[in-house]
Structures are given as structure tokens and as C-alpha cells.
Figure (cartoon, protein in one colour):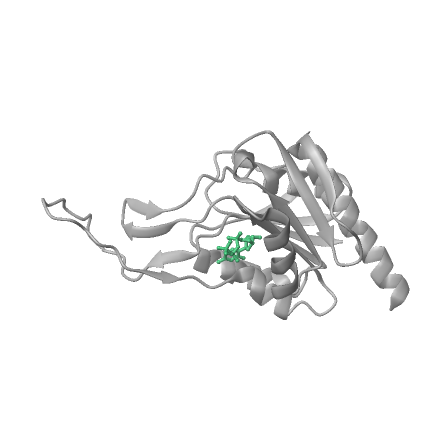
Length: 212
Ligand code: CTP
């Protein structure tokens, strides 16, 4: 399969040196790209700034903002069989980015934010026969909200995890596909979680081919 994976936390710039981002380290996305390549898939990784060496045998497209990630996903979507959105994409970006470094003053500072585009929702809407996998990070009602996301964004699979999984080498995740119940993978290294996710993607693909 041709698999497109996004990873890392996007940055939305306030001025040339300051940005809004999140605590994602990109470990899950990298593990997915590495595992998919090892299993013989053709992998493109769209990576927001990450302090890790790119996995071997993977084409890497480096991006910074949500806008750039969206453009890179659109550029590669037609040729892919599966998109896995493991990136932590900023939901908001500053309305204006200052060209000059902002100076401090004694008064309060308000930064106006506007919503960014939802890449995953766009992919779900335009997927045709492609498999689209999303991630959900919630601090409460994890499975309920993740299942809602699966339906709302027209996904084939959702991987739900809690806030404690950010930046760690191991995590507890819950996986749901449309045709099966929740599968919980407790406290497992991300490379093993990646193997489970890619395995499920392969199964979905085989099922889809048989039914078409
Ligand atoms: N995502 C995306 N584009 C965005 C924001 C998020 O493609 N602008 C993707 C992420 O890569 C992830 C999924 O959406 O796969 C879930 O992101 P999350 O932030 O949990 O969901 P939201 O839809 O933003 O909903 P909420 O903020 O209510 O949790």
C-alpha cells in the first residue's frame, strides 16, 4: 500500500520567534512510518518539527504550520491508499503574524486566534476508497468522544488515547474500526502499537478488496 502518515505538533507563529504549539513529540507517527516501511509499504511521512532522525526507507516532507501540512496532505492524497493523521495539529492560529519580533510592555496582551482547517475532516469527506485513520486525545469521556469523531469525520479507524501518552515511549490506546468493537492495548511500546494499527489497516484493505 501507499501510506501517508502525519506526525508531530504543528506551529502557528505569533511573530518570527514565537509560536503556538503543543507537547507532541511525534513518536507515534514516526513509529507508524517506520513500521509501515518495514512491512513493505511505500511510506510518505509529513512531519511537523520533530527532534528525531527520519526513519529509513520513508519519504519525508517537512512542514511547520497546519496550512503547510494541509497542502502537503492534499499534494499526496490522490496517490495514497491510506492516510494516518497521527499529527497533533493546532486547532487555532493567530489572526495576524507580526513580521517584527513583538516588544514587551507593561499592559496585558491579547492575541486573537482563528480556527485552522480540519485536515482529517477534509480527508474523510474526500476519501473515496481510501482508508482514513484519525487519533483522538481526550481527558474525559475518551471512548464516547472518539467514537463520535469516527462517525463525524467519516473515518475508517480511530485511535483513542489519554493525555498521559504524550511524549512517552509506551501508552495505553483504544482502537475502533466501523466493523468491530473497541480493542484496548494496555501500556505497550509505541512501536508495538504501530504494528497493531498497520496490521488493522492491512486487514481493512483486504476486506475492502474482497467486497469490491
Ligand atoms: N486534526 C486535523 N486537523 C486539525 C486538528 C486535528 O487533521 N486542524 C486531526 C488530528 O491529526 C487527529 C484528529 O484530528 O487525528 C483529532 O484531533 P483532536 O484535536 O483530538 O480533535 P478535534 O477535531 O480538534 O476536536 P476537539 O478539539 O473537540 O477534541
